[in-house]
Amino acid sequence: MKLSIISGSHRKNSYSLKAATYLQHLACQEGFQDANIMDLSTLDFPMWNEGVWNASEEWHDWRTLAAALKQSDAIVLITPEWHGMVTPALKNFLMLCTSEELGHKPVLLASVSASVNGVYPISELRMTGSKNNHACFIPDHLIFRHCESLLVSDKAVSDEQFDSRARYTVKSLLAYAKALGPVRATLQEDMQQFPFGM
Image (cartoon, rainbow, N blue to C red; front, side, top):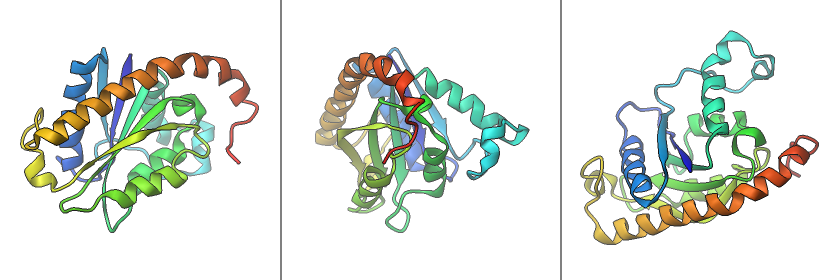
């Protein structure tokens, strides 16, 4: 099972990236054979425009990322909470994704907050993040609250209860990935006829 973890912060060396590294470590422990981090702060593709359909040179980095996503069995989307919202980079990423990259794949949502907040980006993603890419957001999500004291290293958090919850959530993501594989195989051809949600 392959996992792609998307760190949605624009900032270099962000807490979102630290959360991604921590979840990558858990994913490998819980049974994913391959867990790759895609850091949107380092990837160089433009904001969505119709040119993405023409395969012009400006979209080279996106095509590379899209090819890797197509091979993934599950996805993790991580966003900091900026002004109560998802980052523009992550929204752009979701606008670029089609059912070929995310269709009927389980997606774990995670947000990162310096305080007790973090729920608004989860709500925003659940409302609008899957319409045209047919991603399947799993019921559980994670909120890395008080991230500066929670994310103490790349492979550990300071809160044992949070760590237990995160391990359970990653384990459930793997279970969904195994279960949704046949669903995706069954529906992939028909999704080309109905590429957009209603």
